[in-house]
Image 1 (cartoon, one colour):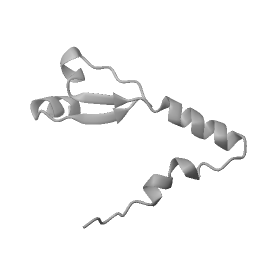
Image 2 (cartoon, helix red, strand yellow):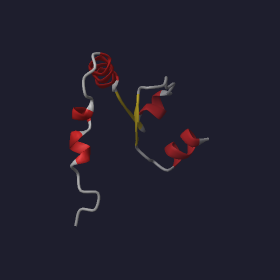
Image 3 (cartoon, helix red, strand yellow):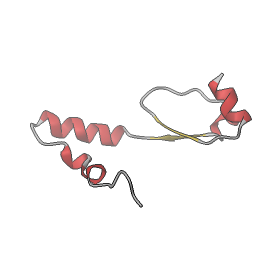
Image 4 (cartoon, one colour):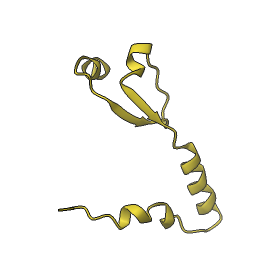
Length: 68
């Protein structure tokens, strides 16, 4: 149902490739799938070696949540 509503209302959705997606050719026009595998692999690698993963989130930590 959700896919039908997205298509009917001409909505563009950004999603990740963390779960499999099965789209028809028409549905693909409404979904941008972002590949985050390299990012997750880097985080796991750094963490498994005892490193800090904070660098992956630094930009987000320094953003102003209420820009005016």
